[in-house]
Length: 317
Image (cartoon, rainbow, N blue to C red; front, top):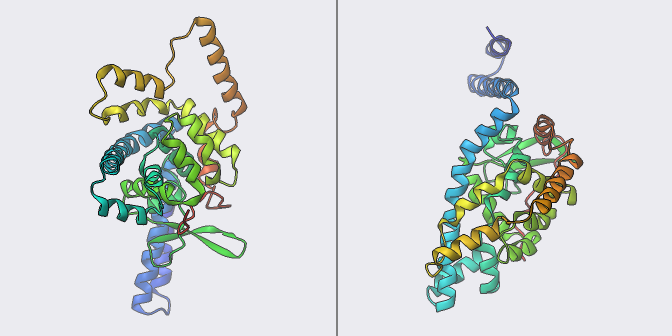
């Protein structure tokens, strides 16, 4: 019998023979059972290799993110067409209210989804490849804080000053990804990021405008860029080209894919320079990139022990 099972039976026995009421005993027993289940999950996760964590992460999250990206891109193209043709005015006005946008231009900034590679990098960093407590217990894979006591949420074990930090709880990972996109589309702190993602789909340029996502600022954005490059997350951005405007012909599609993924046909000498540059990036981030076990360990505690990554809700542009 596992130690955790023995501990569970011991604690439950103590509760059953205590002076608590029946309802209190049931409530306490369920709480103990949950704690034991979390412990067993953590023990199981600890035995999984980094490569296995990464494969599991991609198998679960890539299909979900591509699906939601395509939904959002389709919505963006439809609303853009409506604005250009002055149709569906009521829908546009409703969306402006929903996204705190005071103009059609800002609404398009809010609705335009950013590359999947950025989503994956942030989810990997924030959830330690889907193994953090918040990912396991609340499907919260982006470190999203909760300021509404009436919504589902869980408490972080650490305090910010004398205050308890709460994180939102989601029913599914799909709900978490959709809410993540919406939060970045609404929050005042990401107005420049929103503007830039209508001008470029380069994940490295866009990542620089996510410095407000973490108190680590530039250190955080450099981590995102390194994770995108190191884990080849850009390969998933190509899949998002399935949705394009109908008037773009096949050759233009190919040109756009090449441009968006920085695929260049350069000389061997230039290619060597690129490789050397990439190696330099990896060396500079060796503590967080080359040793991915350490990333999982550190990021798993980012919010739980000293929360500093957040999406502030309820604020407007």
